[in-house]
Length: 322
Image 1 (tube, rainbow, N blue to C red):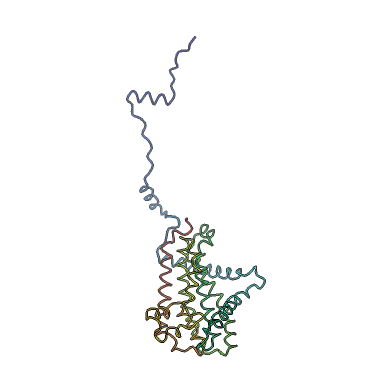
Image 2: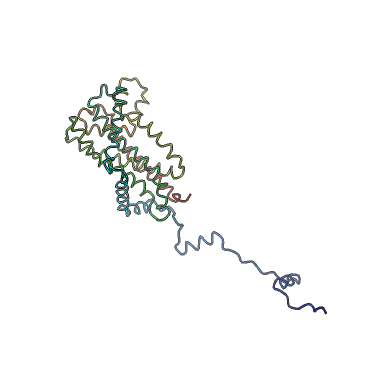
């Protein structure tokens, strides 16, 4: 015997039936819009995670973490040669070996030492000062990509990383300056009052290097191929900076177009190298320096230092996000 159809209906069938009878269907629940959510977040004081702060707030944050910057730089310097048997001696040996190779190739084979008095102090000073800039740039290319774990795990002004790496290179240069002083004394360049000029030169170059490190740090964070291209750019820059030859000898006599000569003389790396030679080497006189070289050095330091900081700060929200 067949059972009569049950009067009980499922919720779905009830909805269908009520709809067929003309009853209004239940209204869907509307999600709040993006504008409503933003207003809600602002009303409760919430901000975007990792949002770029104002420039003044950014500078304050960076200053409050100055102890982290110095500690990070010192730790990196200490661990740099921790696996090598000679340890920290490599901080002195590396530029000295470079100077030896350059002396053999350029001083002996190519005879660039002709007409340059005190060529060995001239060359060694150039190599040490150039290494400071080139190492700061190379360290900057790895400032973000080499510390992604730190960038993604902690909230701090990202400019602390390239600045700390530039400070590490300054610490390494100061450690090596003792060896440079010994070499200078061995070749007849004794300490004098002019050696005190090395302090403002290093201060200006450090500001310049820090700004340059921040520029390449942002570029390399966005385009990792920059780190592969940078060594070729640095090598070309070194050959144009008078590390192994005298800029004054090449540009004198009108053999080069004026624009080319001015570009070589006011090349920032050449400016800082020549100022350091002027401070440390007696035979390198003011007549061998371009006009207004101190103003040029100050201009390069402020332009690249401040400009690099602003350029890096503009992309603060992007670091570690890709």
